[in-house]
Structure formats: structure tokens, C-alpha cells
Image (cartoon, rainbow, N blue to C red):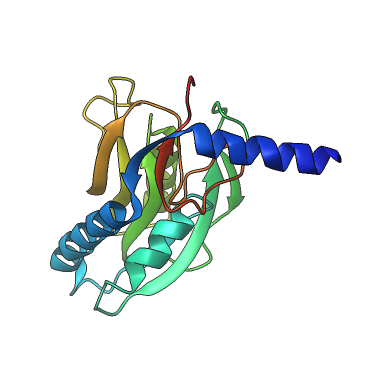
Length: 188
């Protein structure tokens, strides 16, 4: 048996053993509520929506078709994790490709955990001249370790416990972003 086959078996077993916290239909309902709130706030703002890679890709894709107003779409990539399970310094892998000067910007990401990466993205876009920077996350983790007291996203789909989550854009060591639903790894 090859190392790749063993690794894939371990990844499948990990997902099978994980706790399903939120099933796919419940996630879709949360995304629908987020879309309604975002539309109410940004329908007349001519915003730029940035998918924060890689985690924000799934949410952005599912959210866009529910936003019935003109917008520009782009991406950026800042990370503290890479494929690791613990964060380091923020590393920019792809800066914004569209000028944000004078524009309203919406950053879409998977999860607000501690918040260092999201804060760095917001501050960077402000230094580039964005008029307003808003944030949308699928999951807000419930804990007291936020980078700043009271830190929250402008739009959030679900409040979930402080566990190691994957699925719907969140990953486990680079895998399972594609899982339909949100899972928590056992014993992590």
C-alpha cells in the first residue's frame, strides 16, 4: 500500500469519525440569511467582493448567486496557517488585483477564529484607500481569545463552539474544504 493510499484512508477515517455539527441544508439556510443581510446593506453600494483564499472560496461561490445586485468579484490570499493547524505570522500570497480606492469592499472568509488574519486584511485594504471595508464569515467561533475585544464580522452565518472545524471551506491539513456540512475533529 502506498503512502498516498494510507494518507487518504486516514483522511477518510478522520472525517467519518468527526462530529457533524451542521448539515448541508442548515448551512445553506444560514448562507441565505447572510445574503439577505448583505443585500439589504450593499445593494446600492457598487461593492467589490473579495474571496479570501482558500477558505472563503466555497462560501463566496454559494453566496454570489444569492446577491441580486451589481458587484465586482476578485480574490486575495493572506494566511497564518497554510496547511498547518496552528497560526503563525500573516503571509500575503496574493494582494488585491483591483483598486479599492474609494470603494466599498466586502471580504468573504470561512471562519472568524482569533481574527489576526481578518484584521490584517481589513487594515491592508484601508491603507489602499477603501472607503468602507466589511466582513462576512460563515462561522464565528465562540470563545474569549479574539485578537481584539468584541471582534466580530459584519455578517456571520453560524456561531459554533471552539473546536477544530472543517467543511464548507474550512480545512483539515489542506483537505475536506469540500465536505458538505461543518464537522469538528474528534479530540483536537
